[in-house]
Image (cartoon, rainbow, N blue to C red; front, side, top):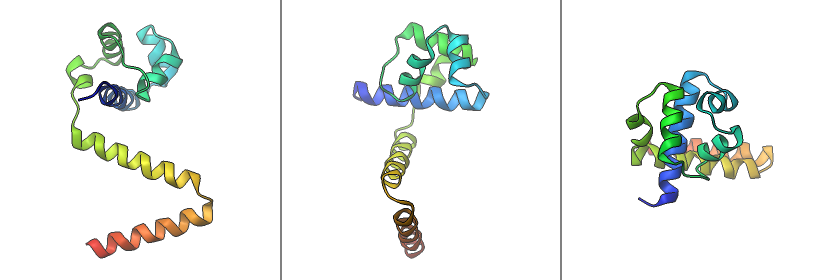
Length: 112
């Protein structure tokens, strides 16, 4: 697995657990003793945290380190695909978004 993939997977897991705990990025960053902007970069997979930072975040979230560093390829592929679709939709005007969503729904019905 490439370093970029590791960073994205770690970021996705950190964000998932943060949201499950109901923490804002700022709140988690404060608890972990890191800068909120850095936490944002971690969650987006732009930075790869040091082991020390991983431990701080896990401690702040009260989750085992293994939960943060374990990821499923299938789960992360699905998340990446969803983000790609969201990015495509965001670039289109509302009228074209609606048309594209109709097309996707029709394709999904045909595949059932």
